[in-house]
Amino acid sequence: MSVRAVAAATCLTVLLAACGGGSDPAESAAPASTLAVTLVRAQMRPIQRTVVVSGPVAAFEEMQLGVEISGARVTALNVDVGEQVRKGEVLLELDHRSLDSELRQANAALSEAEAGVALARANLARAELLVKDQFISASQLDELRAARTQAEARRNTARASRDAAQLRRDFAELRAPADGVISKRLVQPGQVVAAGTELLRLIRDGRLEWRAELPEGDLALVEPGATVRLPSSAGIVTGRIRAVSPGVDSQTRTGTIYADLPEPGPLQPGSYVEGRIVTGAGNALTVPAASVVQRDGHNYVFTLDGNHVAHRVRVAIGAKVGGRVEILDGLKAGDAVVEQGAGFLGDGDTVRVVAAKPAATPAGAATAP
Image (cartoon, rainbow, N blue to C red; front, side, top):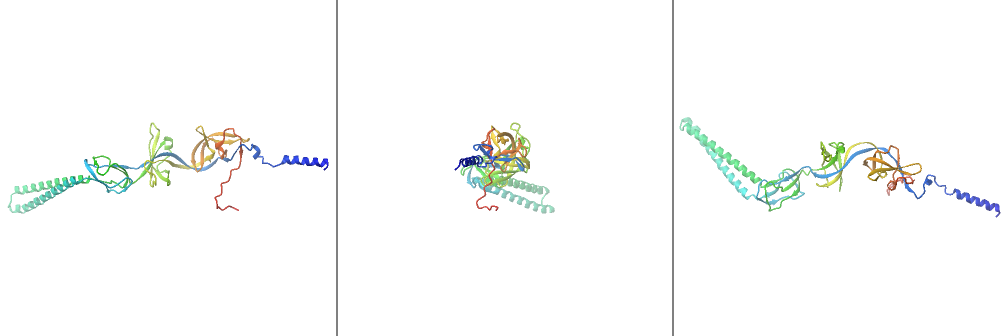
């Protein structure tokens, strides 16, 4: 091979080495070792505005049940915690043998008094026939009328005594004042109880509610009738705000809201759950939740300059719905922020921008040709 041929071959090799690969200028704008990130633009989107707060589930009305007589022994306890009861159902019984005896005596006294009234009325009726023919005097007729009145008074007294004895006998049975669920039992069979002592507790109609304390700023956003969603082991339980406190506590600056739970599902009284109250809907500037990072107690997003250098921007955030976060201050519509990789960035880091990966197609799903 001639010297000229060797020189030509050497020049071609140098030129190929200089042009090799045809790399993308965008990809080479930053070293390959820098962090790869994706960008997304802040967008105006419809959003459902909510207030999130935690509070306890409680009974709407919990009734404390006891008896009205003292010194009696419990002879029968017919219910236990968690049982459904109907209004008028006998929940427990006390020893009522002495009360039964008193009631029988009262009934006998009433029967005797009623017989006396019947006799007095009959005597007076006969006397009124005889007085027309002057077989008896007017004074005798007056005495018979007085006897009838006295008999009726004794009958009324006996009837009142019988009613009192019946009432004491009824007190020996504790009956459910309303439909509901037994939530607490504080008595055992054989126990001697006192009047006014709480023995059982009843959740009226089994009705539960959710209560929460809201700061005055959030309290003003909530109105009766608003929907609240509570998480449970069986899914979301939906309630409705029944009442909102008309004022706030002067020390805590909070007010109370009350939400009815028509179908509480697995939620139990005493459970402490986080509720999401829907307060309205509207358009808002939003970014993906992955774009917002917390540092030093504040919220930030990252923007890029023309040299692919990340800059931290402090933002004020609002509602968080559907994987997106409302931006109240710090950005405007159309601003590009880092999405994937934002959590690993620091202010001033150089990054490499890559295209976002498309969502994976589920196995077996049809794809467009």
